[in-house]
Image (cartoon, rainbow, N blue to C red):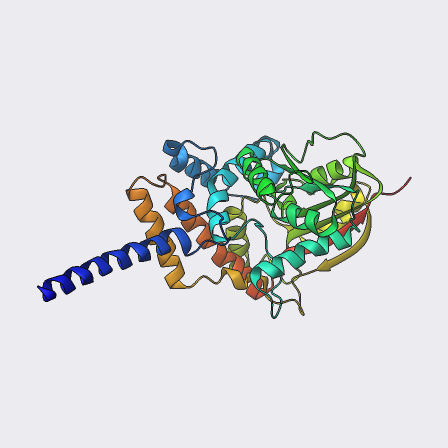
Length: 365
């Protein structure tokens, strides 16, 4: 009798431990934010579940030859809608695995990834000399991680613009949860044709977003238009560095992988950025590649081990099989994983930087 009771106890203990492990494996492990996205919450933005795979295929085909998109007016005109599709596909996965600030930051000794990210964002506020009472524009705000950090840090009001409506809803959710809905606002729109009046912002910034523009001068000219005279604008740009060699097949392959997986219509060279800013009327105050030493390697977070990749892959495959995740999510996860490999190679070889900083001022007269 006692043996039967012990066996029953052991069985129920095993069942409870198994369910506890599965809950931890699916719902907790891998989440980048406390009370953030969980694996069971993954959607694909505003895309209907039955259309996810088709939308992924459409995106992948469109960015087959990224650099050609900038030279073709017809193709360039389609970029905004495809970029929106891209963010429908990846927003929940990146928030689940990365957090609310979907960008890179230099590793800082003694700091967690989250702390290093916050310092990188607060540096933006310091560069543009933001303070309470200022109205600041976040160009390509995503789900608003940086805007919340900057608003909390300096007390300014921040208006963000993103091409993707699903990101607007996620940003609004997080703004309210953080108690910053009165300081942070988000609108859905194209940063190539912003719905703001001329000279309506005191300061502006962009963190790894303007790289999606087929022509950088188009977005810089819009920022110039909506910025008040004397206002500062800082941007962290994705660029190829002087170490990149167009005649090196490995270099070309790495950069092409970054462009395809990152929805980029052709990466620009570091040396082009300042000239483009001056062309639209800006004064260039400062330039610096924030990825260079003594900064720690920004790609450290991307070095996902085999166990972590296997965990995510198995998790998403099971959820898809059970109908809890839409068909196509595994392919999107694979795309992001392959892009992470290319980004890591770009960082390790030194041919790519996601944080070439340029600080500009709109002349007073």
